[in-house]
Every structure is written in structure tokens, then in C-alpha cells.
Length: 354
Image 1 (cartoon, rainbow, N blue to C red):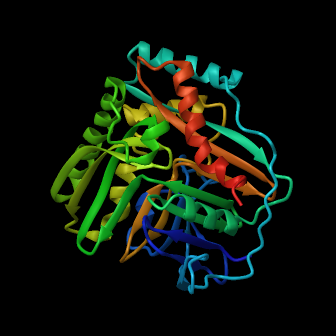
Image 2: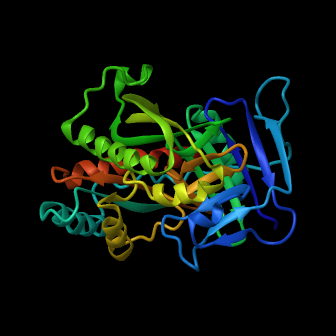
């Protein structure tokens, strides 16, 4: 089967289908190799020979209205039957997560890291497989504020993401990235709004500031006229985050891959100091992240690259769901576990929503 991808930008009423009609996607071992490239990028958290950045060549690119809108037919003939597994998540931390948390938290208390992100994977099943395309359309309907993408390559299989975090995108000559960190779950009447009544803890504010400061240091090396706005509260599904927006100009777009190499992975999915946190995560996290907390999206004249948060790897009727959270010194095991449970629900709810 040829490689292909669907994506829908936030608040858009259509999606784009990119297809490579022959051969396998280009494999790259560095973000810098994306300089002057075009296509759809599927990048992992940890770039390795057995887990490379993949670039789907845009042999065919078509835009379609989203299915379900009156008088606007979408792609037809996509099967999809859902069956409920009855599984609704684990209410208390798993032993492996507790071990990882204790290990990570000890590094924070000793001063090795100022922040580090701990991720985990949860497996779900359905009575009958749900077509990946159907899950993509469910995500589009349920999460209008998010970037929704579904990518298939022979090397990776199917990966679906619903993410609020821009890594790098442009609108003509203007470029944008964001610092997104801090998480709170909306409850009761809060679900009727955009999180206006949320009061942020010092831990969440500090975590977001770490990410914003890092992005400032990166952009100073590559960009001109960059401006930061925020932070502000933004909603993503039933969660809210703190977000700062950075807009800037790039004197030379031919070195986009070099900027990506500086940005990825951001402290929002890794930690600080970044290089040391990355090394610790790849050697100590119980569950390999694979393409979770990497990035996906089109690159070229119109670039929309998003961090692969709230994502799942689809294997027939088996679904591997990924989520993570940023730890600071005052983090607690129970609070961090509940945060990952709330994030996993973004994908989990799609499996039982026909």
C-alpha cells in the first residue's frame, strides 16, 4: 500500500489528502535533512536508523469537504464499525508508571533537571476494528480546535493525532510557533466556556515559562522581528493549557530544517536542560515513545507542522494510546497520573463514539 496522509487544520471545514503513489517515503536521520524539502512529515521523538523521519512525497494532493455536512459529500465508501471494549482506563497509577515517576522525580529533587516529561502508553481494543479513516473523521467532528492528522507508511503503520501544539507553521512570509504547557481538566460549568474561570497553579505557570524561554533562545538564532504574545488560556477538548504565541520572519527559508533541529523536541515534550533530559528519557522510560511527541504535517511553501500529542498507533482492532506530562519538583504521582488519564481520553473517546 502506498504511503498517504490526511490532515485538517484547526477550525477548517475541509481536509487534505496527500498521497505518494509509488515507492517508499524518504527516510531521514536529521531534521536538517528537511531543508528545501516538500511533502508530509512523520517524525519520531527519538530519530534513529530503525525509527527515521519519513517524508511522504506529494504525488497527489486533493482537498475534500468533511463528510457529514449537508450537501457536501466527502470521500465515500469508508467502512467503520465500532464495538465497545468496556475498558475505561486505570484509576490508580500502574506499577511501571510509579517506578518511572519515582526515578524521574528523584532527578528533579537532586537538581539534575528543572523539568522533565514522563510519558506512557495505554492499550485499548474494540470488538470489531474501526477503519483508521473513520477515526480521523470522528476526531475532526469532535475536536474542531485541534490539528487532526492521520498518516500511513509501510514503516510506521497508521498514526492518528489530535493536537493543539504548533511546532512551526507559516502564513505567507510570517511564521509562527507556540509555547504550550500546563494542563488542567475542565469540570461542570467550565465545560460551557473556553476556560476563562481557570486559576493556574504556580507549577503550571512555571512549566509554561520554561518552554517559552527556550523558544525565545532558539528563535534568536534564526529569526528576525519575532514577537511573543501571552500566555493565555486555550481549550483543547476537555482540557485547557497555557499558551504563548511567537510570530517571526525567516530571512532564509532554505534552512527550515536547521530551525526544526533546534526546536525538536521542545521542552514541552522533553525537559530542561533539553539534551540531558532527552538522553535520560530515551534510556529510562518504560514504554518507547516511537512517533508520539515527534511531529507531523505538511512542509513546503505551506508548512503546518504540529507536535504529535494525543495520538494513537492503530493496528486492526488494537490501539496504542500515548500521553505524557511535565514533571517539576512539586509534582505528585497521583496528580500526574490523572493528567495523563485526562489526555488519553482525547483518543480513547473516539473508539466508542460512533
